[in-house]
Length: 45
Image 1: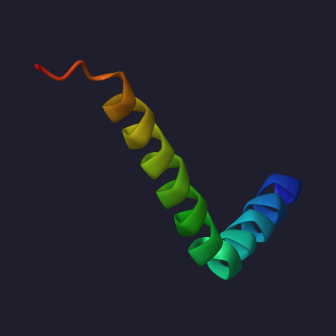
Image 2: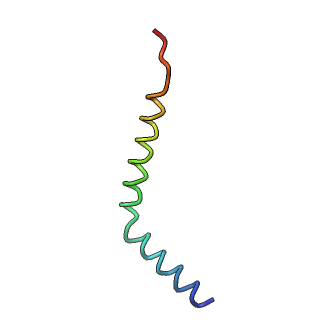
Image 3: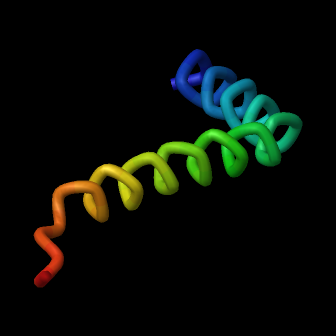
């Protein structure tokens, strides 16, 4: 149980330190997904 708690604290620390990088990557992935979706939309005309 102590190992799990220690691992959770370590993971929480990594997220606290790198939350801006995670947000940056999520934004890029979201933008690529939206771009791919818009590229597949069949526009009239």
